[in-house]
Image (tube, rainbow over all chains, first blue to last red; front, side, top):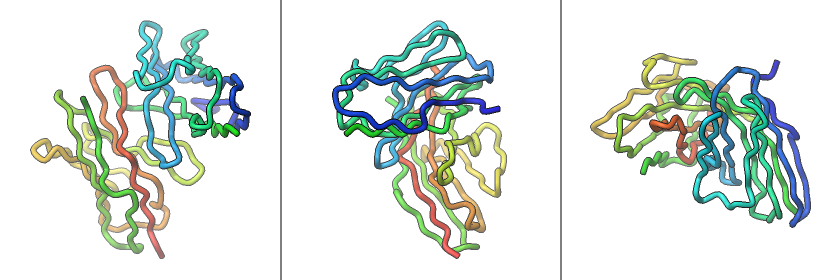
Length: 111
Length: 108
């Protein structure tokens, strides 16, 4: 059983398209996150979300939006994709401070 | 604002040599620090946390508040230690801020 699963693993799409990446966790964690890993392997927090609060990194463009239908899911919607959005996106969840469980990542390529 | 700095992008050592991956942080509160590891084609996973004071896979890390450092050490590197290593700091809101990562290459 995969604790944090993301789909799809790979996503190739054209500029201007709208796409979604799904994330599900079966750990019963309260908080979920999205991180972006760029080509230089730098990891940057995009969103943190629990059933009470959404925290958005102010540097994230508003073309990116998280959607959480329930506590076990946090999907990432991206509108009007740009070349610079190409990266690996990681979903994670946590219950205890700093102890994150990460998904295997979604490699997004915008052409 | 909190910040985590890993000054080395790449660290290359021979098998059996000691290894130290450097991490410095800045944070106004009481820090909680972690090391995460990402092996090739695998997901990022927690290696160790400073409050546990544990040794995982032979790695240890000591929090030095005076020097604001949390360096990761292993006395004898193994080839299977080759990976990306990320130092991370957790704030009061349980959000992890990661350093830029250090790629460790252990040569035979």
